Length: 276
View 1 (cartoon, one colour):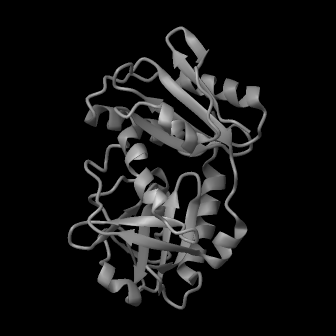
View 2 (cartoon, one colour):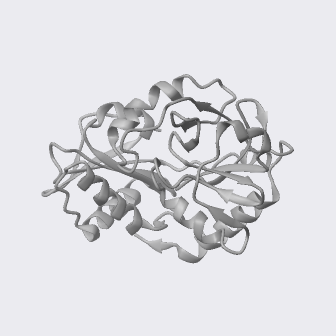
């Protein structure tokens, strides 16, 4: 099933002159000088922290010197119209703004595919990439969608994600996710050198009462000492990680803290959904 893409112009929604098989596939048609955000719907037309996504989109535009002025109500109506038109149920969607034409938004939709339950119950296997920290990571720039392709293509078939490390070997973030580790019964996650994801906001909020939080990254040399690890993103929530670079995290199984955080995250999500 192809991706459904339209442009929201000052004159209204218009079709684009290309067809892609997925959000990932349509990246090749999108500008490399823009900014974007990605999330998904629940119960067809409900969203989570949508204004936070738009706040970050506007912030990314300012950092990239893009004069973006969002009409949020008009954007919501356009997305809802597209969702109702395709009738796929839940969708994953991307909003892209180009530097050359910030008055036009590129709206891309694909059917939302929930994660395989096996990944959540058994965990994922990931790797790191040395000295791969992003330039200006707090800007969610379309250039990164193009750049990360090489890292994605280099991943072996059984690897779920690649974590970016700085020049000193500290683990910062995933290709499209934030990274967390449990060490000494404390949740560690980088505060600087990362894109502060919208799901990260929720993780840090629900972590209160479950375990203490330290806004610092762990070092690659500490992998064998980690009790647990996981990643988060808006479209996936919390995803357990049970090995990195072939090194088992803890006992190689999804840990109790990760399970508790996943449950708290899910509860928070259901309590804060809103209509587009």
